[in-house]
Length: 567
Image 1: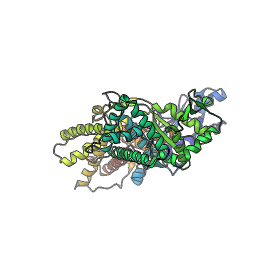
Image 2: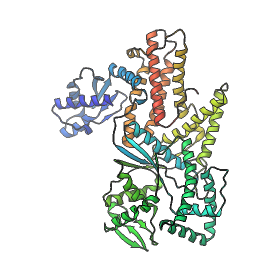
Image 3: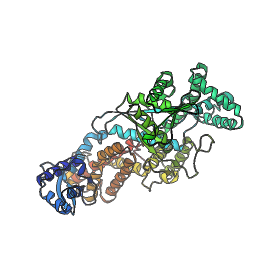
Image 4: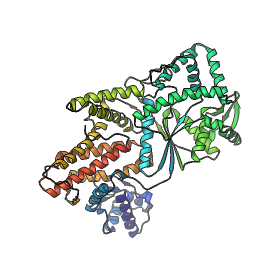
Protein backbone atom coordinates (compact mmCIF):
# COMPACT_ATOMS: atom_id res chain seq x y z
CA UNK A 1 0.00 0.00 0.00
CA UNK A 2 2.88 2.40 0.75
CA UNK A 3 4.55 1.46 -2.54
CA UNK A 4 1.37 2.32 -4.43
CA UNK A 5 0.93 5.59 -2.52
CA UNK A 6 4.47 6.64 -3.48
CA UNK A 7 3.86 5.62 -7.11
CA UNK A 8 0.68 7.74 -7.16
CA UNK A 9 2.57 10.77 -5.83
CA UNK A 10 5.46 10.37 -8.30
CA UNK A 11 3.12 9.88 -11.27
CA UNK A 12 0.88 12.85 -10.44
CA UNK A 13 3.90 15.15 -10.05
CA UNK A 14 5.29 14.05 -13.43
CA UNK A 15 1.92 14.53 -15.16
CA UNK A 16 1.63 18.03 -13.73
CA UNK A 17 5.15 18.84 -14.93
CA UNK A 18 4.18 18.17 -18.55
CA UNK A 19 1.16 20.44 -18.20
CA UNK A 20 -1.67 17.94 -17.72
CA UNK A 21 -4.06 17.39 -14.82
CA UNK A 22 -5.41 14.02 -13.70
CA UNK A 23 -7.57 12.64 -10.89
CA UNK A 24 -6.38 9.77 -8.70
CA UNK A 25 -9.19 7.61 -10.13
CA UNK A 26 -7.76 8.16 -13.64
CA UNK A 27 -4.28 6.80 -12.86
CA UNK A 28 -5.51 3.22 -13.46
CA UNK A 29 -2.86 1.25 -11.57
CA UNK A 30 -2.75 -2.50 -12.09
CA UNK A 31 -0.47 -5.47 -11.57
CA UNK A 32 1.89 -6.29 -14.42
CA UNK A 33 4.29 -9.04 -15.44
CA UNK A 34 6.73 -6.31 -16.52
CA UNK A 35 6.82 -4.28 -13.30
CA UNK A 36 5.70 -4.15 -9.67
CA UNK A 37 3.02 -1.64 -10.63
CA UNK A 38 1.85 -0.32 -13.98
CA UNK A 39 -0.35 2.66 -14.87
CA UNK A 40 -2.66 3.14 -17.86
CA UNK A 41 -2.99 6.89 -17.22
CA UNK A 42 -1.55 7.68 -20.68
CA UNK A 43 -4.65 6.15 -22.30
CA UNK A 44 -6.91 8.53 -20.39
CA UNK A 45 -4.72 11.55 -21.11
CA UNK A 46 -4.51 10.58 -24.78
CA UNK A 47 -8.30 10.60 -25.11
CA UNK A 48 -8.54 13.97 -23.34
CA UNK A 49 -5.75 15.71 -25.27
CA UNK A 50 -5.92 13.80 -28.58
CA UNK A 51 -2.31 12.70 -28.52
CA UNK A 52 -0.62 9.34 -28.97
CA UNK A 53 -0.67 7.42 -25.62
CA UNK A 54 2.83 6.00 -26.19
CA UNK A 55 4.15 9.53 -26.75
CA UNK A 56 2.42 10.78 -23.59
CA UNK A 57 3.81 7.86 -21.52
CA UNK A 58 7.31 8.66 -22.76
CA UNK A 59 6.90 12.35 -21.85
CA UNK A 60 5.63 11.46 -18.37
CA UNK A 61 8.57 9.12 -17.70
CA UNK A 62 11.05 11.82 -18.79
CA UNK A 63 9.49 14.17 -16.21
CA UNK A 64 9.66 11.69 -13.33
CA UNK A 65 11.71 12.58 -10.27
CA UNK A 66 12.10 9.85 -7.65
CA UNK A 67 12.52 11.29 -4.11
CA UNK A 68 15.33 10.11 -1.87
CA UNK A 69 14.33 7.16 0.30
CA UNK A 70 11.50 6.12 -2.03
CA UNK A 71 10.44 2.51 -2.40
CA UNK A 72 10.45 3.15 -6.15
CA UNK A 73 13.84 2.58 -7.77
CA UNK A 74 13.00 3.04 -11.44
CA UNK A 75 10.17 4.25 -13.67
CA UNK A 76 10.03 3.42 -17.39
CA UNK A 77 7.47 3.03 -20.13
CA UNK A 78 6.46 0.08 -22.27
CA UNK A 79 4.39 1.49 -25.11
CA UNK A 80 1.53 3.38 -23.43
CA UNK A 81 2.11 1.74 -20.02
CA UNK A 82 4.11 3.47 -17.27
CA UNK A 83 6.00 0.90 -15.18
CA UNK A 84 7.16 1.28 -11.58
CA UNK A 85 9.92 -0.93 -10.22
CA UNK A 86 10.50 -1.38 -6.49
CA UNK A 87 14.01 -1.01 -5.12
CA UNK A 88 16.11 -2.51 -2.38
CA UNK A 89 14.72 -0.14 0.24
CA UNK A 90 11.24 -1.57 -0.36
CA UNK A 91 12.46 -5.16 0.05
CA UNK A 92 14.46 -4.44 3.19
CA UNK A 93 11.67 -2.43 4.78
CA UNK A 94 9.20 -5.24 4.13
CA UNK A 95 11.38 -7.73 6.02
CA UNK A 96 11.91 -5.29 8.91
CA UNK A 97 8.19 -4.45 9.15
CA UNK A 98 7.04 -8.08 9.22
CA UNK A 99 9.56 -8.99 11.92
CA UNK A 100 8.54 -5.92 13.93
CA UNK A 101 4.74 -6.11 13.59
CA UNK A 102 4.32 -9.91 13.54
CA UNK A 103 0.59 -10.68 14.10
CA UNK A 104 -0.31 -7.06 13.39
CA UNK A 105 1.33 -7.10 9.96
CA UNK A 106 -1.28 -6.26 7.34
CA UNK A 107 -3.61 -4.49 9.78
CA UNK A 108 -5.18 -1.23 8.63
CA UNK A 109 -5.78 1.98 10.55
CA UNK A 110 -8.81 2.15 12.84
CA UNK A 111 -12.03 2.75 10.92
CA UNK A 112 -15.76 2.94 11.61
CA UNK A 113 -18.29 0.39 12.89
CA UNK A 114 -19.91 -2.41 10.90
CA UNK A 115 -22.68 -4.85 11.83
CA UNK A 116 -22.32 -7.94 9.67
CA UNK A 117 -25.09 -10.54 9.64
CA UNK A 118 -24.49 -14.02 8.30
CA UNK A 119 -25.86 -17.58 8.47
CA UNK A 120 -29.19 -16.76 10.22
CA UNK A 121 -30.50 -20.19 9.23
CA UNK A 122 -33.98 -21.07 10.43
CA UNK A 123 -33.82 -23.04 13.72
CA UNK A 124 -35.77 -25.96 12.31
CA UNK A 125 -32.91 -28.42 12.02
CA UNK A 126 -29.21 -28.92 11.42
CA UNK A 127 -26.98 -26.78 9.25
CA UNK A 128 -26.07 -28.33 5.90
CA UNK A 129 -23.37 -27.47 3.37
CA UNK A 130 -25.60 -24.81 1.78
CA UNK A 131 -25.80 -22.98 5.09
CA UNK A 132 -22.09 -23.21 5.79
CA UNK A 133 -21.13 -21.39 2.60
CA UNK A 134 -22.98 -18.45 4.13
CA UNK A 135 -21.15 -19.00 7.45
CA UNK A 136 -17.71 -19.30 5.87
CA UNK A 137 -18.11 -16.29 3.57
CA UNK A 138 -19.56 -14.20 6.41
CA UNK A 139 -16.98 -15.20 9.00
CA UNK A 140 -14.04 -14.70 6.61
CA UNK A 141 -15.41 -11.30 5.56
CA UNK A 142 -15.70 -10.28 9.21
CA UNK A 143 -12.09 -11.34 9.82
CA UNK A 144 -10.87 -9.41 6.76
CA UNK A 145 -12.80 -6.30 7.79
CA UNK A 146 -11.42 -6.51 11.33
CA UNK A 147 -7.85 -6.80 10.01
CA UNK A 148 -8.55 -3.86 7.71
CA UNK A 149 -9.30 -1.80 10.83
CA UNK A 150 -13.08 -1.90 11.12
CA UNK A 151 -14.92 -2.45 14.41
CA UNK A 152 -17.10 -5.40 13.40
CA UNK A 153 -19.99 -6.92 15.33
CA UNK A 154 -21.20 -10.22 13.87
CA UNK A 155 -24.89 -11.03 14.30
CA UNK A 156 -27.20 -14.00 13.75
CA UNK A 157 -30.84 -13.07 13.14
CA UNK A 158 -32.97 -15.75 14.79
CA UNK A 159 -36.31 -16.57 13.21
CA UNK A 160 -38.16 -17.39 16.43
CA UNK A 161 -41.78 -16.81 15.36
CA UNK A 162 -42.41 -17.63 11.67
CA UNK A 163 -44.44 -20.46 10.16
CA UNK A 164 -41.49 -22.88 10.19
CA UNK A 165 -41.00 -22.26 13.91
CA UNK A 166 -44.71 -22.77 14.49
CA UNK A 167 -44.32 -26.17 12.79
CA UNK A 168 -41.32 -26.97 15.01
CA UNK A 169 -43.25 -25.94 18.12
CA UNK A 170 -46.23 -28.06 17.04
CA UNK A 171 -43.90 -30.98 16.32
CA UNK A 172 -42.40 -30.77 19.83
CA UNK A 173 -45.90 -31.32 21.23
CA UNK A 174 -46.75 -34.25 18.94
CA UNK A 175 -43.49 -36.20 18.62
CA UNK A 176 -40.87 -37.32 21.11
CA UNK A 177 -37.42 -35.77 20.77
CA UNK A 178 -34.48 -38.15 20.48
CA UNK A 179 -32.40 -36.88 23.39
CA UNK A 180 -29.44 -39.03 22.35
CA UNK A 181 -28.89 -36.77 19.31
CA UNK A 182 -27.57 -33.24 19.01
CA UNK A 183 -30.58 -30.99 19.71
CA UNK A 184 -30.65 -29.49 16.22
CA UNK A 185 -30.61 -32.97 14.65
CA UNK A 186 -33.43 -34.07 16.95
CA UNK A 187 -35.44 -30.98 15.94
CA UNK A 188 -34.79 -31.76 12.26
CA UNK A 189 -36.23 -35.28 12.73
CA UNK A 190 -39.53 -34.11 14.18
CA UNK A 191 -39.76 -31.18 11.74
CA UNK A 192 -39.62 -33.63 8.84
CA UNK A 193 -42.26 -35.83 10.52
CA UNK A 194 -44.48 -32.80 11.12
CA UNK A 195 -44.37 -31.75 7.48
CA UNK A 196 -45.39 -35.24 6.44
CA UNK A 197 -48.42 -35.06 8.76
CA UNK A 198 -49.31 -31.53 7.64
CA UNK A 199 -49.41 -32.68 4.04
CA UNK A 200 -51.89 -35.39 5.02
CA UNK A 201 -54.24 -33.46 7.32
CA UNK A 202 -55.53 -29.91 6.69
CA UNK A 203 -56.77 -29.61 10.28
CA UNK A 204 -53.17 -29.60 11.47
CA UNK A 205 -52.47 -26.66 9.14
CA UNK A 206 -55.23 -24.73 10.93
CA UNK A 207 -53.53 -25.50 14.25
CA UNK A 208 -50.30 -23.97 12.88
CA UNK A 209 -52.21 -20.82 11.86
CA UNK A 210 -53.62 -20.51 15.37
CA UNK A 211 -50.15 -20.82 16.88
CA UNK A 212 -48.87 -18.01 14.65
CA UNK A 213 -51.78 -15.73 15.63
CA UNK A 214 -51.26 -16.51 19.30
CA UNK A 215 -47.56 -15.73 19.27
CA UNK A 216 -48.12 -12.44 17.45
CA UNK A 217 -50.87 -11.54 19.93
CA UNK A 218 -48.36 -12.06 22.77
CA UNK A 219 -49.79 -15.25 24.25
CA UNK A 220 -47.27 -16.18 26.95
CA UNK A 221 -47.79 -19.96 26.81
CA UNK A 222 -47.33 -20.06 23.02
CA UNK A 223 -44.28 -17.81 23.17
CA UNK A 224 -42.70 -20.11 25.77
CA UNK A 225 -43.33 -23.13 23.51
CA UNK A 226 -41.67 -21.34 20.59
CA UNK A 227 -38.73 -20.18 22.72
CA UNK A 228 -38.08 -23.69 24.04
CA UNK A 229 -38.01 -25.21 20.55
CA UNK A 230 -35.82 -22.43 19.13
CA UNK A 231 -33.34 -22.63 22.02
CA UNK A 232 -32.81 -26.35 21.37
CA UNK A 233 -32.09 -25.85 17.67
CA UNK A 234 -29.84 -22.80 18.21
CA UNK A 235 -27.76 -24.68 20.82
CA UNK A 236 -27.02 -27.36 18.23
CA UNK A 237 -26.35 -24.81 15.47
CA UNK A 238 -23.87 -22.96 17.72
CA UNK A 239 -22.00 -26.22 18.38
CA UNK A 240 -21.75 -26.90 14.63
CA UNK A 241 -20.50 -23.38 13.93
CA UNK A 242 -17.91 -23.74 16.69
CA UNK A 243 -16.51 -26.82 14.93
CA UNK A 244 -16.18 -24.65 11.82
CA UNK A 245 -14.34 -21.96 13.84
CA UNK A 246 -17.26 -19.55 13.41
CA UNK A 247 -18.63 -17.41 16.25
CA UNK A 248 -21.27 -14.69 16.45
CA UNK A 249 -21.12 -11.74 18.82
CA UNK A 250 -24.88 -11.47 19.14
CA UNK A 251 -27.98 -13.57 18.45
CA UNK A 252 -30.95 -11.27 17.82
CA UNK A 253 -34.50 -12.67 18.00
CA UNK A 254 -36.94 -11.26 15.46
CA UNK A 255 -39.77 -11.33 18.04
CA UNK A 256 -38.14 -8.46 19.95
CA UNK A 257 -39.17 -6.06 17.20
CA UNK A 258 -42.76 -7.14 17.43
CA UNK A 259 -42.75 -6.85 21.23
CA UNK A 260 -41.14 -3.40 21.12
CA UNK A 261 -43.72 -2.01 18.73
CA UNK A 262 -41.07 -1.40 16.05
CA UNK A 263 -42.91 -3.62 13.52
CA UNK A 264 -46.22 -1.78 13.97
CA UNK A 265 -44.41 1.55 13.71
CA UNK A 266 -42.59 0.68 10.49
CA UNK A 267 -45.81 -0.60 8.89
CA UNK A 268 -47.51 2.73 9.63
CA UNK A 269 -44.58 4.69 8.18
CA UNK A 270 -44.65 2.59 5.00
CA UNK A 271 -48.40 3.22 4.70
CA UNK A 272 -47.75 6.96 5.08
CA UNK A 273 -45.66 6.93 1.87
CA UNK A 274 -48.80 6.25 -0.17
CA UNK A 275 -47.21 3.16 -1.68
CA UNK A 276 -49.44 0.57 -0.03
CA UNK A 277 -52.69 -0.99 -1.13
CA UNK A 278 -54.90 -3.88 -0.07
CA UNK A 279 -54.54 -7.03 -2.17
CA UNK A 280 -56.84 -9.92 -1.16
CA UNK A 281 -56.92 -8.49 2.36
CA UNK A 282 -53.11 -8.22 2.66
CA UNK A 283 -51.15 -4.95 2.81
CA UNK A 284 -48.66 -4.76 -0.08
CA UNK A 285 -46.08 -2.15 -1.10
CA UNK A 286 -45.74 -0.85 -4.67
CA UNK A 287 -42.04 -0.60 -5.57
CA UNK A 288 -42.43 -0.31 -9.34
CA UNK A 289 -40.46 2.95 -9.45
CA UNK A 290 -37.52 1.02 -7.97
CA UNK A 291 -37.77 -1.54 -10.78
CA UNK A 292 -39.80 -4.22 -8.98
CA UNK A 293 -42.94 -5.37 -10.74
CA UNK A 294 -43.84 -7.69 -7.86
CA UNK A 295 -45.32 -6.00 -4.77
CA UNK A 296 -43.96 -6.65 -1.27
CA UNK A 297 -46.38 -8.08 1.31
CA UNK A 298 -45.85 -6.48 4.73
CA UNK A 299 -49.02 -7.64 6.53
CA UNK A 300 -51.19 -10.72 6.00
CA UNK A 301 -54.95 -10.56 5.58
CA UNK A 302 -55.34 -11.82 9.18
CA UNK A 303 -53.32 -8.85 10.46
CA UNK A 304 -50.11 -10.76 11.29
CA UNK A 305 -46.70 -9.55 10.17
CA UNK A 306 -44.21 -11.42 7.98
CA UNK A 307 -40.54 -12.26 8.35
CA UNK A 308 -39.81 -9.46 5.87
CA UNK A 309 -41.75 -6.91 7.94
CA UNK A 310 -39.81 -7.79 11.04
CA UNK A 311 -36.60 -7.77 8.99
CA UNK A 312 -37.29 -4.14 8.03
CA UNK A 313 -37.53 -3.22 11.73
CA UNK A 314 -34.36 -5.22 12.45
CA UNK A 315 -32.45 -3.28 9.78
CA UNK A 316 -33.56 0.07 11.14
CA UNK A 317 -32.36 -1.05 14.58
CA UNK A 318 -29.01 -2.15 13.14
CA UNK A 319 -28.33 1.05 11.24
CA UNK A 320 -28.93 3.08 14.40
CA UNK A 321 -25.94 1.28 15.99
CA UNK A 322 -23.42 1.14 13.14
CA UNK A 323 -21.98 3.14 10.28
CA UNK A 324 -22.45 0.26 7.87
CA UNK A 325 -24.68 -2.81 7.78
CA UNK A 326 -23.69 -5.83 5.68
CA UNK A 327 -25.90 -8.89 5.02
CA UNK A 328 -24.61 -12.17 3.58
CA UNK A 329 -27.50 -13.85 1.77
CA UNK A 330 -28.08 -16.76 -0.61
CA UNK A 331 -29.06 -16.25 -4.23
CA UNK A 332 -32.68 -17.11 -3.40
CA UNK A 333 -32.80 -13.81 -1.46
CA UNK A 334 -31.94 -11.60 -4.45
CA UNK A 335 -35.51 -10.38 -5.00
CA UNK A 336 -36.53 -9.97 -1.38
CA UNK A 337 -33.26 -8.23 -0.41
CA UNK A 338 -33.72 -5.80 -3.30
CA UNK A 339 -37.29 -5.09 -2.18
CA UNK A 340 -36.11 -4.65 1.41
CA UNK A 341 -33.46 -2.12 0.33
CA UNK A 342 -36.02 -0.23 -1.77
CA UNK A 343 -38.57 -0.10 1.05
CA UNK A 344 -35.97 1.15 3.53
CA UNK A 345 -34.91 3.81 1.03
CA UNK A 346 -38.54 4.88 0.55
CA UNK A 347 -38.92 5.62 4.27
CA UNK A 348 -35.52 7.31 4.57
CA UNK A 349 -33.53 4.53 6.24
CA UNK A 350 -29.98 3.78 5.10
CA UNK A 351 -29.85 0.57 3.07
CA UNK A 352 -27.68 -2.43 3.96
CA UNK A 353 -24.88 -3.67 1.72
CA UNK A 354 -25.77 -7.10 0.40
CA UNK A 355 -23.31 -9.89 -0.40
CA UNK A 356 -25.15 -12.49 -2.47
CA UNK A 357 -23.63 -15.94 -2.83
CA UNK A 358 -24.63 -18.66 -5.25
CA UNK A 359 -25.34 -22.13 -3.99
CA UNK A 360 -22.88 -24.81 -3.05
CA UNK A 361 -23.76 -28.47 -3.41
CA UNK A 362 -22.19 -31.87 -2.91
CA UNK A 363 -21.60 -34.40 -5.67
CA UNK A 364 -24.56 -36.26 -4.10
CA UNK A 365 -26.92 -33.47 -5.20
CA UNK A 366 -29.11 -30.72 -3.78
CA UNK A 367 -30.52 -30.46 -0.26
CA UNK A 368 -33.84 -29.71 1.43
CA UNK A 369 -34.36 -29.54 5.20
CA UNK A 370 -38.14 -29.97 4.85
CA UNK A 371 -37.91 -33.25 2.93
CA UNK A 372 -34.88 -34.49 4.82
CA UNK A 373 -32.80 -34.80 1.64
CA UNK A 374 -29.57 -33.33 2.95
CA UNK A 375 -26.22 -34.16 4.47
CA UNK A 376 -25.77 -32.21 7.67
CA UNK A 377 -22.69 -30.08 8.18
CA UNK A 378 -21.74 -32.26 11.16
CA UNK A 379 -21.88 -35.41 9.01
CA UNK A 380 -19.76 -33.68 6.39
CA UNK A 381 -17.18 -32.59 8.99
CA UNK A 382 -17.00 -36.14 10.37
CA UNK A 383 -16.38 -37.58 6.88
CA UNK A 384 -13.71 -35.03 6.01
CA UNK A 385 -11.90 -35.36 9.35
CA UNK A 386 -11.96 -39.17 9.04
CA UNK A 387 -10.43 -38.91 5.56
CA UNK A 388 -7.83 -36.43 6.85
CA UNK A 389 -6.94 -38.83 9.68
CA UNK A 390 -6.15 -41.56 7.13
CA UNK A 391 -3.74 -39.19 5.37
CA UNK A 392 -2.07 -38.15 8.65
CA UNK A 393 -1.71 -41.84 9.59
CA UNK A 394 -0.01 -42.51 6.26
CA UNK A 395 2.28 -39.48 6.43
CA UNK A 396 3.11 -39.53 10.15
CA UNK A 397 2.62 -43.10 11.43
CA UNK A 398 5.14 -42.59 14.23
CA UNK A 399 3.15 -39.83 15.96
CA UNK A 400 0.73 -40.17 18.90
CA UNK A 401 -3.00 -40.67 18.50
CA UNK A 402 -3.63 -37.24 20.08
CA UNK A 403 -1.35 -35.58 17.52
CA UNK A 404 -3.07 -37.37 14.65
CA UNK A 405 -6.53 -36.42 15.93
CA UNK A 406 -5.61 -32.77 16.45
CA UNK A 407 -3.94 -32.36 13.06
CA UNK A 408 -6.69 -34.23 11.19
CA UNK A 409 -9.30 -31.86 12.67
CA UNK A 410 -7.22 -28.82 11.71
CA UNK A 411 -6.67 -30.14 8.21
CA UNK A 412 -10.23 -31.37 7.70
CA UNK A 413 -12.00 -28.21 8.83
CA UNK A 414 -9.38 -26.09 7.04
CA UNK A 415 -10.09 -28.00 3.83
CA UNK A 416 -13.83 -27.33 4.12
CA UNK A 417 -13.38 -23.62 4.82
CA UNK A 418 -10.78 -23.07 2.11
CA UNK A 419 -12.45 -25.04 -0.65
CA UNK A 420 -15.70 -23.12 -0.15
CA UNK A 421 -14.24 -19.63 0.30
CA UNK A 422 -11.76 -19.85 -2.60
CA UNK A 423 -14.63 -19.46 -5.08
CA UNK A 424 -15.99 -15.95 -5.67
CA UNK A 425 -19.38 -15.64 -3.89
CA UNK A 426 -21.34 -14.96 -7.08
CA UNK A 427 -20.25 -18.29 -8.58
CA UNK A 428 -21.92 -21.58 -7.75
CA UNK A 429 -19.67 -24.45 -6.72
CA UNK A 430 -19.66 -28.16 -5.91
CA UNK A 431 -17.75 -29.04 -2.74
CA UNK A 432 -15.69 -32.15 -3.45
CA UNK A 433 -14.23 -33.06 -0.08
CA UNK A 434 -11.82 -35.65 -1.49
CA UNK A 435 -10.20 -33.07 -3.78
CA UNK A 436 -10.17 -30.50 -0.97
CA UNK A 437 -7.99 -32.80 1.14
CA UNK A 438 -5.39 -33.35 -1.58
CA UNK A 439 -2.07 -32.10 -0.19
CA UNK A 440 -0.73 -31.58 -3.70
CA UNK A 441 -3.66 -29.53 -5.05
CA UNK A 442 -2.67 -26.25 -3.36
CA UNK A 443 -5.70 -26.07 -1.10
CA UNK A 444 -5.77 -25.58 2.68
CA UNK A 445 -3.55 -28.62 3.50
CA UNK A 446 -0.94 -27.27 1.07
CA UNK A 447 -0.93 -23.84 2.77
CA UNK A 448 -0.95 -25.38 6.26
CA UNK A 449 1.93 -27.67 5.31
CA UNK A 450 3.90 -24.66 4.05
CA UNK A 451 3.44 -22.98 7.42
CA UNK A 452 4.47 -26.17 9.24
CA UNK A 453 7.54 -26.42 6.99
CA UNK A 454 8.59 -22.87 7.95
CA UNK A 455 8.15 -23.76 11.63
CA UNK A 456 10.22 -26.91 11.15
CA UNK A 457 13.10 -25.02 9.50
CA UNK A 458 13.22 -22.49 12.33
CA UNK A 459 13.01 -25.21 14.98
CA UNK A 460 15.85 -27.12 13.36
CA UNK A 461 18.00 -23.97 13.25
CA UNK A 462 17.41 -23.33 16.95
CA UNK A 463 18.36 -26.91 17.79
CA UNK A 464 21.58 -26.75 15.76
CA UNK A 465 24.29 -26.57 18.43
CA UNK A 466 26.88 -25.41 15.89
CA UNK A 467 25.03 -22.24 15.05
CA UNK A 468 23.81 -19.41 17.26
CA UNK A 469 20.25 -18.53 16.18
CA UNK A 470 19.73 -14.81 15.60
CA UNK A 471 17.65 -12.47 13.48
CA UNK A 472 20.32 -9.74 13.58
CA UNK A 473 20.45 -9.85 9.84
CA UNK A 474 21.08 -7.92 6.64
CA UNK A 475 18.10 -8.29 4.25
CA UNK A 476 20.25 -6.87 1.42
CA UNK A 477 21.87 -10.31 1.20
CA UNK A 478 18.57 -11.71 -0.13
CA UNK A 479 19.24 -11.30 -3.83
CA UNK A 480 18.06 -14.53 -5.48
CA UNK A 481 14.97 -14.35 -7.69
CA UNK A 482 12.92 -16.68 -5.50
CA UNK A 483 13.88 -14.66 -2.39
CA UNK A 484 12.85 -11.37 -4.00
CA UNK A 485 9.62 -12.89 -5.34
CA UNK A 486 8.73 -14.16 -1.86
CA UNK A 487 9.38 -10.76 -0.27
CA UNK A 488 7.23 -8.99 -2.86
CA UNK A 489 4.44 -11.52 -2.39
CA UNK A 490 4.50 -10.99 1.38
CA UNK A 491 4.47 -7.23 0.91
CA UNK A 492 1.15 -7.54 -0.97
CA UNK A 493 -0.68 -8.83 2.13
CA UNK A 494 -1.96 -5.41 3.26
CA UNK A 495 -3.21 -4.66 -0.27
CA UNK A 496 -5.07 -7.99 -0.40
CA UNK A 497 -6.75 -7.21 2.94
CA UNK A 498 -7.67 -3.75 1.63
CA UNK A 499 -9.06 -5.22 -1.60
CA UNK A 500 -11.08 -7.92 0.17
CA UNK A 501 -12.58 -5.32 2.53
CA UNK A 502 -13.28 -2.87 -0.30
CA UNK A 503 -14.97 -5.35 -2.63
CA UNK A 504 -16.42 -7.62 0.11
CA UNK A 505 -14.94 -10.65 -1.65
CA UNK A 506 -13.04 -13.01 0.67
CA UNK A 507 -11.87 -15.29 -2.16
CA UNK A 508 -9.06 -12.83 -3.00
CA UNK A 509 -7.38 -13.70 0.31
CA UNK A 510 -7.79 -17.44 -0.32
CA UNK A 511 -6.10 -17.11 -3.71
CA UNK A 512 -3.33 -14.95 -2.21
CA UNK A 513 -2.63 -17.47 0.58
CA UNK A 514 -2.15 -20.23 -1.98
CA UNK A 515 0.17 -18.01 -4.06
CA UNK A 516 2.13 -17.07 -0.93
CA UNK A 517 2.59 -20.75 -0.02
CA UNK A 518 3.71 -21.42 -3.58
CA UNK A 519 6.26 -18.57 -3.45
CA UNK A 520 7.62 -19.91 -0.15
CA UNK A 521 7.92 -23.45 -1.50
CA UNK A 522 9.67 -22.21 -4.63
CA UNK A 523 12.20 -20.43 -2.41
CA UNK A 524 12.65 -23.47 -0.18
CA UNK A 525 13.04 -25.80 -3.16
CA UNK A 526 15.83 -23.82 -4.83
CA UNK A 527 17.61 -21.98 -1.98
CA UNK A 528 19.60 -23.66 0.85
CA UNK A 529 18.76 -22.22 4.27
CA UNK A 530 20.18 -24.33 7.10
CA UNK A 531 22.97 -25.58 4.82
CA UNK A 532 23.96 -22.11 3.55
CA UNK A 533 27.75 -21.81 3.86
CA UNK A 534 27.89 -18.09 4.67
CA UNK A 535 26.67 -17.42 8.23
CA UNK A 536 25.30 -13.95 7.38
CA UNK A 537 23.41 -15.31 4.37
CA UNK A 538 22.04 -18.10 6.57
CA UNK A 539 20.81 -15.52 9.09
CA UNK A 540 19.15 -13.47 6.37
CA UNK A 541 17.41 -16.52 4.91
CA UNK A 542 16.21 -17.67 8.33
CA UNK A 543 14.76 -14.22 8.85
CA UNK A 544 13.00 -14.59 5.51
CA UNK A 545 11.62 -17.98 6.60
CA UNK A 546 10.33 -16.40 9.80
CA UNK A 547 8.66 -13.64 7.79
CA UNK A 548 6.99 -16.27 5.61
CA UNK A 549 5.85 -18.09 8.75
CA UNK A 550 4.32 -14.87 10.11
CA UNK A 551 2.48 -13.90 6.91
CA UNK A 552 1.27 -17.46 6.30
CA UNK A 553 -0.05 -17.54 9.89
CA UNK A 554 -1.76 -14.16 9.47
CA UNK A 555 -3.31 -15.30 6.19
CA UNK A 556 -4.59 -18.56 7.66
CA UNK A 557 -5.91 -16.80 10.77
CA UNK A 558 -7.82 -14.28 8.65
CA UNK A 559 -9.24 -17.20 6.65
CA UNK A 560 -10.32 -18.80 9.94
CA UNK A 561 -8.06 -21.80 9.31
CA UNK A 562 -5.81 -23.34 11.97
CA UNK A 563 -2.04 -23.23 11.47
CA UNK A 564 -0.44 -26.48 12.76
CA UNK A 565 3.25 -26.22 13.60
CA UNK A 566 3.76 -29.84 12.63
CA UNK A 567 1.95 -32.04 10.11
